[in-house]
View 1: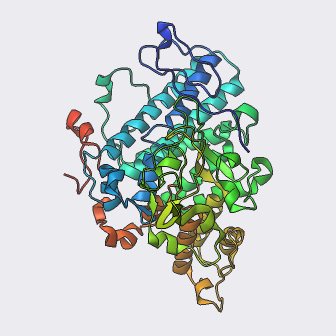
View 2: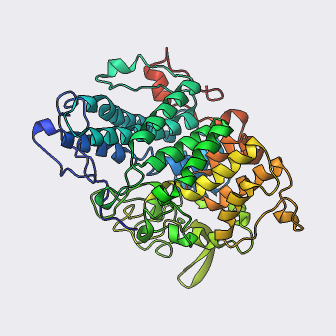
View 3: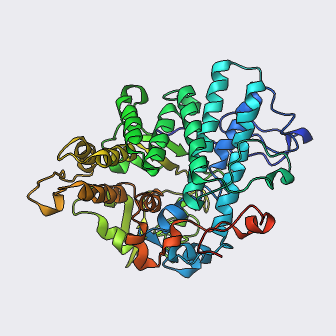
Length: 488
């Protein structure tokens, strides 16, 4: 369901200087140290401050580009086939990225800017006189967003500075060294548990796109899964599945109907980053980013094709015969000037941009099929049961894709999943094709300790499970910020 309301850009001028922004979920009030201590006094102020946290999701270091570069390009799903697509991205693809690679710094800086915005809401809102239910909801949204950003950081970099207060000047930042992943995860879980308690199951009208109770539950289930806390993951994910009457989540009938601007915020979507073209920098870049260099207007009709996320032949071959998801996800060729050019490219984010890098496509962070597959995985890890409930949830996703069910004793060897280890691989395969090009593959392989086995032939070494910290962070605070192994 398409919503006309999208997050708008942060105003560049400080409010204290006399400028202002329209104040809706779509518009972001500035978050700056000049106004941070004096501005946030009313419910409307907090609404604008919260919108700036959502706006951070559009940063280049988050879902505008970094998360798909890391989530897919780092894996065997996609590659850089033309060096003109970007040297730093090619280095990530080839496992040659160093501490001065801009992907690390952009990702680090963007996430911490977003976390600072979230901390302002979380730390300021209690003192604001406003409706208590709305106050709890706004705080819950900020807690969810902070948890999401820390979840990204801890999976990418490992130990990271854990900052839950407002940083008022640069000198304060020097106090914060890297906290253990265990401590960061404890904060993430605490944030999500609190968010779950204060968020509604769904929003309507102009509030569609905000974080919900279901989003907090889904992300918490993924956090438990990442930490290999299988029973907790299974419990949380099952609770979300059982709450379908409240959440309205479901697998929609057509896989192709999940994607494209006309299908945003549908009943399968749990949380997605909102973009809107023609709105002064609020458009998404994916249509242009994912089109092959040299394709002219054959793949994207407006703007430059940038070739930054090209499906590998291995990814193309990962789809089973008859899998309806492939045609909705990628193509193997295009026609240019009457000639067929054999070249893989992604079509999940196809559309007609208003200008280059300015399209309507949202980025889906969490959706219901992801939840079903995570639940199947968690059940299998707590104990394999031949043709048990884990098979049911795995096969729900396969059935929608037009594929036969997998069973424990299938006469067809390709459909037989006879033990726990085989089920792990079945889930891995299903997640790869179901969630292709949505930024999950790298994180799935690292989470399941399969990254090195799958990617060693592409240049991965053991230390590459973490990205290098930005060298700039080490240079400005060398006493407390140390580099990850393998990047010194």
